[in-house]
Image (tube, rainbow, N blue to C red):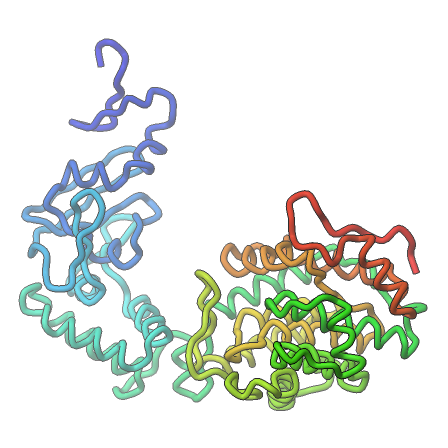
Length: 473
């Protein structure tokens, strides 16, 4: 300190970082600092459930003695209580993390009042929200397991009264005890319409962005209105939609499959995926129907199942036309669990049909279907078919995602899904539509040539990008 090589963060806590604000240093070394000042502590109550400090920097602990400490950006609040219990887990820097059943009992302990801007305890409504999320991820079995684990811990934690409260709240969420839940998703589920609340919030985020979006100029069909042009653009729609999902053929091979019925003996199922997709996106009657403008939810649901059945008609193992029975995921993204599919579809459908323009409705409907993933397989192809039907029904050009644009498209979806940021997703769709609108689809050979000039058939690479064609149609 005397030599100017250390700064004091707080009593007995120092840093060699002489430049950054102390709050930033504390944030980066949060749990190390907590472990130095409270080495025998268990991270508990609200902090254990939320896995982060409160907004004002408060961390709630349980340990051998009551202890409080304030540092820049950090408030340590330790209550005297039992050491680690069954189910608690070792955490970073030698700390222990309370189990969820223990933490829920701790936040329901009676007779405590808020003493700072952050509360160690939770209201009944906050606990209900946590329990509802537990039900959504694991169903009734998960809630019963949580309650049983809490029952085993209650005596050691002196939390018998909190256990009674937790038991009542679990019963309300399950519908087995008198009382009305306060969480909207629980109310809807007990009324027979369960849905994924987090997905609904995400749909509203996209809805707000679309309503405030600097609307793209409409991309009308124009000179591409002929039956020949419809057939050609439908072929490339089906071809690229399958390529995105990993069903890859050379374009000439796919053309033989679709137009001449030549099925490769080595890959008959893949070939039928392309044929099934073309059967939908090449069906002029089907594509010129806007489900968001003309259907109620029941009709939309049946139209959705019928489209999936047509696309995957040669894949009986994928249960064509049937909603999923097992949860699915892609990488770190977990899609809507089976019990919430229909309710979440209904919420998304109701939000999407309130939008004004074909582009807005198309983008929203595609994202709703992609984010829910209602089927075992084929969700992307179904989502893009419904997206383009909203455009075709209004005499607008489709949005086709060429092979070279695949990573941009998937990145846009991921950023919206995980970071709630719609801009990259909307920019991707708008650019894809502008590319399609500038191509002459009336001749297959001319369309293929134009697609090659804009690098459409290339694999995604950092130095190869999708380009706009030189000439407007």
